[in-house]
Image (cartoon, rainbow, N blue to C red; front, top):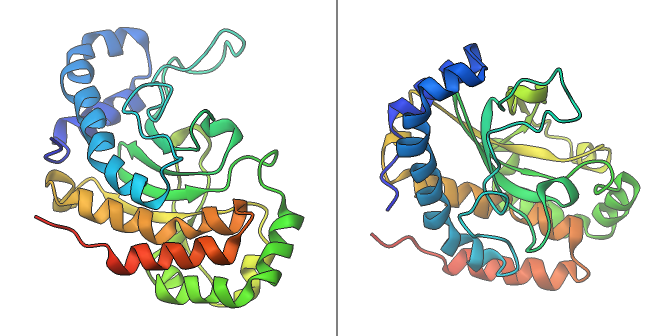
Length: 244
């Protein structure tokens, strides 16, 4: 059962950021094995029912190389890479696909807090011209999505920061045209490590709400029947309730 993030998790991620070496990791392996890994698995397990409501075809297995990215970097062909990533990536891609070849909802556990977002995938996945055509063809539905879920009020664009995980949140301009001229979609929200909700089981409700709000990006990017899937989504969202 997920009961929140121990402060030791963020202390561990801060230490890894400052001392990205195998020696440091081995000295603190007990924290990773006994606190970090079990918490991440519990988090994925707790979110899985909500992801299945959105789309039963998304991967929700609380396993490494399924929904949980490995902390170790592959340095076989990149000798200058640090041995470890600076964040823990949780993704919910379509079953049978990886974060590198599909759009997905995600969480990133970072030294400074937890990011929750949607990413449209690398350039090999996100076709900007096709996206523009889709938004034009479904403009009224997309506006409804933005308004109902208060996307431009509650969320921001996530600036990239290379291997350091998601960077800062950038406010989303109010103009609708911004959505027709994107090279990719990276949008979401951020909970700083000092936010008390991270240490509470109620974080699941906050995370699930954000994932519910952001999911239509996936529909507008990938669906062959946008209107039908979006209306079905609205019905699910309207009838969805958290139960203590």
